[in-house]
Image 1 (tube, rainbow, N blue to C red):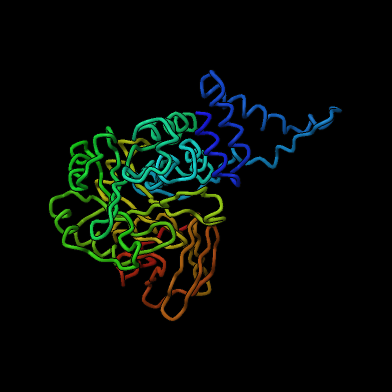
Image 2: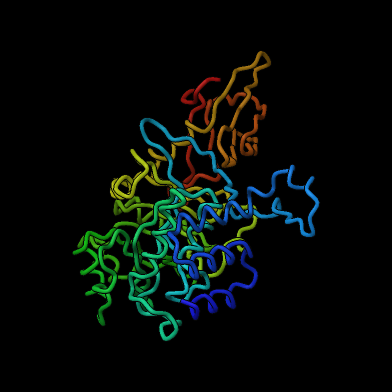
Length: 388
């Protein structure tokens, strides 16, 4: 474990110093994790009370600068009886080719306001294998301990990694990653399905910037092997893949595919994530929603989803109020901006803001940042929106 910690520290010199303190405390203490975290929070948070500054001492810890246990809440309403779970189903750790320890991924996700992540380390690509002890399930086990403390859901997974034309696939909700390691990637996919996995075709436009549906993918779709397709990954958006999801009835997905620390990647923007409309906050609830295709891909202000799901979601986010001057007040109650095209006018509706606009003669809007197909944006009648 000391070797693993040293590797983690050297590869993450820019990572939050507080997290390293927590990792040291956990690794070199025999106490349960929850006790270690309690001690950590007591040291770095409790002492920030102002009355401590009135006590004369040699060292004052400016703990208000510490944001490890500060969560950026993302306010997104659900609809009907569904709640929105913010999920990243594609992350990597030092147990494949990532630069972060598994529980570091949990703290990052909690800080970013997520409800669930999947640990999807590569089966075939493990650059630290000679340094780290543990099998293909080890990264999930480490992450799970931290996730339970943080009330975050972590989903077991792996990434089956081959060159095009096959490409990369995430297997989610697996039982034993070790059994999925096969020489033939099709055997790996078959074993994952045997374990009840939800299979995602990852970043279909990488690495050659060509989004191509090869015959092998058509075969996997026909056989029911592929359940979902990433239409957003890392910094890329693949509108063409939305068409495949709609045509083949596959779940629309987005994932960060994060390998390094995520804090420096997206700054004040959301990471790529999948909005899951679930009946309950649980692993089973997420699994059921993915199989039912109740998802929206979200990244950089753009959304992609099936028209029924996306339209219901927009209706839950936007409210209107009719004014006396042939205008309407339009309120966005979510943390997601909307780009509204209204006849010949274009409006930006920022997150948690109200704007004024004229009532369109046809009462129709086009949501320019809401994709239902490659070349089709969501259209909605203002008569369908809720009144304030």
